[in-house]
Amino acid sequence: MNPKAAKASDPARETLLGHGITPTAQRVRVAQLLFACDRHLTADQVIAALRASGSRVSKATVYNTLNLFARKGLLRALNFDPERCSFDSNTRPHYHLHDVETGELMDVPPDDVVFSRTPALPPGMENLGVDVVFRVRRQA
Image 1 (cartoon, rainbow, N blue to C red):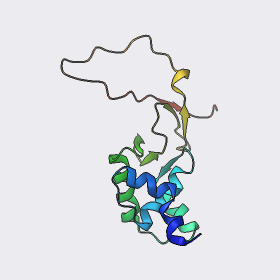
Image 2 (cartoon, helix red, strand yellow):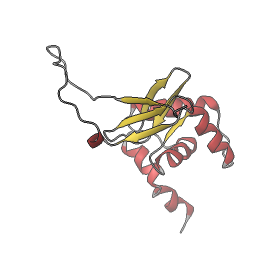
Image 3 (cartoon, rainbow, N blue to C red):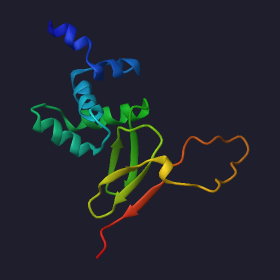
């Protein structure tokens, strides 16, 4: 297969194009890393993973790319930890367990959480989603 044909059929590239994002080489590498499976990564973890795979990428490029992906709905920016922002490649409805000692985030399926009711919204407002975080740590 010729390299141009392979490049054109790359699922990460197609995803970016489908969301109106120009698929630069760096953006495609970030997308390939994040969309290979559902995961939660900080910008520093993305940089480390890309560099470990031999990719040369700047910190500014990674931060800009992650924020662009979040604005376009490809990622969710999670600010559960005051020390760092994590980016979640699972954009389907779900909640999170946050290990406050390790910083690890784990998905919780929406069916595992039951609400008996939600608050009435002020007039003219609409619900865009519900974020639930269960903060956990190992028992002493």
